[in-house]
Length: 152
Image (cartoon, rainbow, N blue to C red; front, top):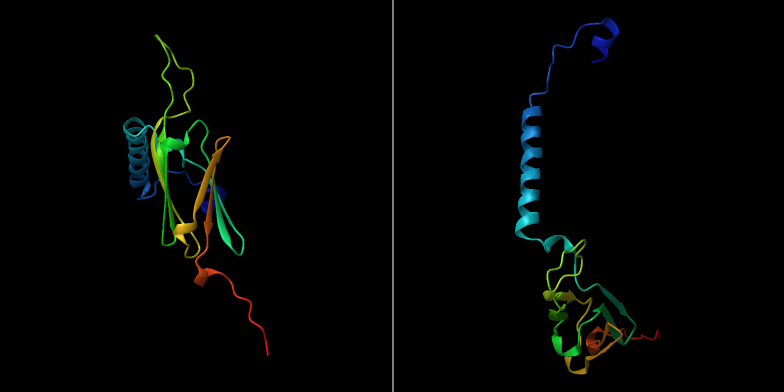
């Protein structure tokens, strides 16, 4: 390329042998993107609900944002070192002939499984829902709690 510029040799449309394959790859990617947007419209919505997981020496604390969802529409389960959160978000439909200009809130069933860093005691799990925030307090199993070791 530099040799051609320096000595004025014309470029006879020399293309890379892989340029046609690259063009086909781009077209296939565009096609698949359009198919998935139409076939699975909720796929691009992201992960719901959003979750924060923290811990202290005694417990794990799981907090999930669930605006507009009642406690009766939720199912929380704990086993081993996993927490399962599932439910259904219901959004009332608009009355009459309505034209949407933007629709970002989706209704439907959701499910998330969260792996915890250690084993838990499923008998002591407590959950509360207030102001659209679900808080689950998960006690650690005795074998997962840190132990202070004295040095003799």
